[in-house]
Amino acid sequence: MNRRGITEHPQPAGTLIRRSLTALPLAMVSLAAAGCGAKEGTVFMPEQASTYAADVDWLFYYIFWVCVFFTTLIVVLMIYFAFKFRQRERGEWAQGSTHSTSLEIGWTIVPTVLVLSFFVFGFRGMLDMYTPPETEADRVYVNAKQWNWSFRYKNGATGKNLYLKCNRPVELVMTSDDVIHSLWVPAFRGKKDVVPGRYTKIWFEPEWDQERAGRVELDNDGDGTIDETYEKGLVYDLKCTEYCGQDHSRMLTKVIVLPPSEYDKAMARIANPTDTYESPAKYGEALWSQYCSSCHSVDGSAATGPTWLNLWGKRQVMSSGESIVVDEDYVKESIAYPQAKIVRTYENQRMSSFKTQFGEAEYIGVIDYMRQLSGEEVQKSWPGGTKKQEEREEDARPPADADAEAMHGEVGACCVKAEQEREAG
Ligand code: HEC
Ligand SMILES: [Cu+2]
Image 1 (cartoon, rainbow, N blue to C red):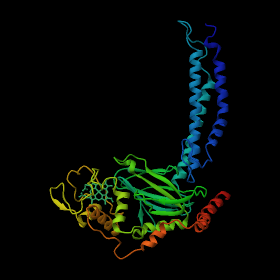
Image 2 (image 1 turned 180 degrees about the horizontal axis):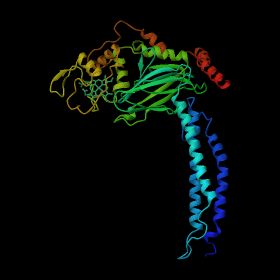
Image 3 (image 1 turned 135 degrees about the vertical axis):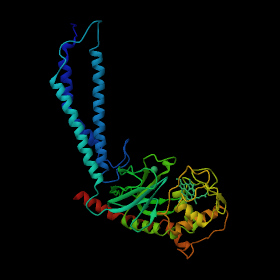
Image 4 (image 1 turned 45 degrees about the horizontal axis):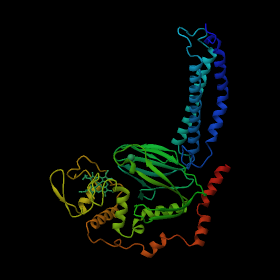
């Protein structure tokens, strides 16, 4: 046997492994702890904005550092052993000790305990995410379709943004009209598939952060003008995270976390589009941008569905060969029952019904917008009258400085209080 034969070395290698294994649990816990408690985002994670976000991150970093540790340990030892016990001469073979009971037991028990700990922490976290708190959670009904989201609130109003009350649990009851989508708010960590033909649920409790909360200005139709403002709020992204077709990446909207008084304003606003938009055509344009723009262009360019430019009054040929003049009845039918009449050459595309999202104001809005796109004269204001123009401008203007300060002091104060109470209790 060689001077540096294998028989001389099983002990040192075994000791090395055993030593590292005893130090391991301590190192793991302190490393995992380093990643938690941070509200700020990290390299891997966005900010933590819900009550369970910190737990998710803790588990992520725990598993991450366990993996980093073992990958390093295994690769370093592998390289070291490959070098140390390399064959130095032709015909040299390993001899002697080939079995170490303590080593076998060690590398069976330690990984088992670690993997079980992943399971226990992960399962507990999953149960937390699936079980809304005992206190009555608010409910929001979510509809997903290619390629937009809509949220229906207690007051019956529907909108494309998810408005939430700060420090108040909310349960989303979700379903899809076509394919599988998945709702994801990265800052809340929660994520759940939205499946056609059944309801799935997820809940969050958005945490208030008085420091970071600021004035919220939303341009819902992307035309460069502000449609909604709130004195104080937090805004996060909400996206679809299950590939659902060509414009999957456009299923992107906002979560707006608001103190109760501002939340009530948001509810009133979406319930009364006639106050928010000065004319049906303007509202129609906003609806187009929120729900229809992923498939219908308004500049004549090709998309999943026919363009709306000069569509109004046009003779449209259906797949049946029948030709139809685009008027109110046809548009309304196409929105509520898109499959009733299919436009020729669009047989392989599919539009989902907006029957549940649309009421009379929405139909009138889209119709007027289409008429406008065909160069027709449209109504300058809502039939039956609405808020006066000055009032609307008043709403859109930021409050004078003194007012603003008074409001910032008080808006969100209740959320801060709720937060302090939670921390204390
Ligand atoms: C997933 C893509 C998609 C979305 C989103 C979509 N549509 Fe469509 N739409 C289509 C397709 C495809 C057709 C043509 C096939 C048919 O007639 O059903 C169509 C046809 C129509 C027609 C008949 C047009 C014509 O040329 O005869 C109207 C009106 C219409 N859509 C309105 C809307 C409105 C309003 C919205 C938004 C609230 C909307 N669509 C959202 C895909 C879509
Ligand atoms: Cu989707």
